[in-house]
Image (tube, rainbow, N blue to C red; front, side):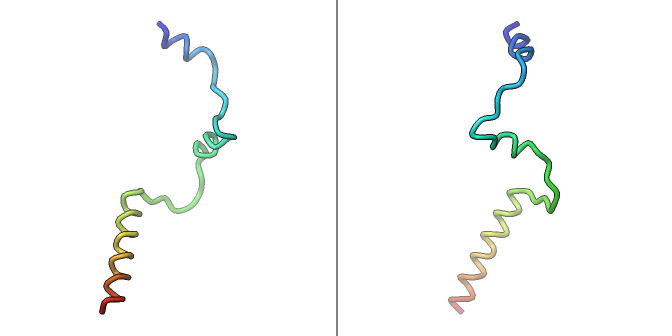
Length: 54
């Protein structure tokens, strides 16, 4: 029952000066999964280190 009461209270105010609302908005542009971005970043670092060695 306590869960139903919480849902009926209304929305909570945005935390941290509206940052919560900022991340809820849908933005246009390229969407890349974080895992792919991390792999590409590590790959770029490895290639840079290997280029400096050779």
